[in-house]
Amino acid sequence: MENLYSKLYDKYNKLKTRKDSDLDRYNHDQEVKFTDYMAAVEELVNCLRSENDRLVTKNQDLMNELASVRADRSDKEELCVQYEKLLTEETRKGKELSEEVKKLRNLQQEWLSCSARVRYNENGQMESPRGTYLESGQISSVSTRKRHSADEDPDSRGKLPVVTETEKDSHTGLRSDNDQSIQKESCCGKVISSGDSINANCVFHTLMEFLIGMKFEFVTKADGPCLSALHQSSGYSFTLMWLTKASENEPLELLYHVLSLGTFERIAPEWMREDLIFSSSMCPVFFKRVSSVIGLHL
Image (cartoon, rainbow, N blue to C red; front, side, top):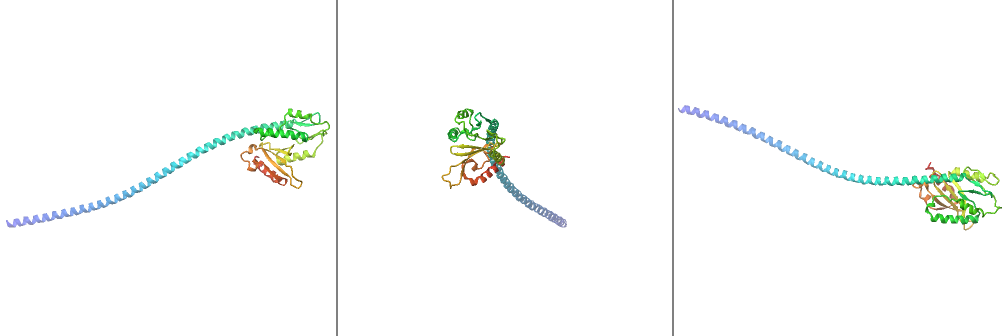
């Protein structure tokens, strides 16, 4: 019996030892797997945290960009409103300028029509609806009256002097029968006088108009001789008046006065808008600058 018990005990110990060994091996394998799992989980958590931080930063950048876009949009909307106001203002000015151009063209047509109807009265005097040539004393009074009328009526600025048929008739009787015949150049350059002769001044006058590209008219006023110029296509007109010299040694000076800028209203330089006084030696420079501005209109 003792041998049997001894064999059974040995067999029990072997089974127990083998079972304990298998259990220890299993526990060790599970521990290794759990350790690997925890390491993988920790690595994944760190990766997710990094990705979350990156997404938070990107979201903040996108929010800042959105705020910047909204600010730019607001600025652009304000700029668009300003452009719309500017467009409306420019459209209004364009309409006003078109109306002014239309008026100036009508005035030009009237001026050409009046120039074409120049006639010679029965006393040998040259008359036209644009103006009447009088003696120096009579011209002084008429010019003074015109000047007062132009100062009172702002609409008269920009228009050439016009003498009506009534005014012409009122001055017809002021001339004496022995007055000399007066020559007047028409728009085509033809000279009309009592003898229907050719005058070199007419040719020179016409040549000046061709060179400068403007219509000229010489008028004698109380302040002195005056040259009135008109650029027909733009409506730009001005006067040049000979100023009285205090002494013979002083150089001749001229006074520039603009009547109307016409279509040059927006592009005209400052000197064209103001009254200027310059010496006769500066005339070439003056007409060169006028021609350069007129050339922009072509």
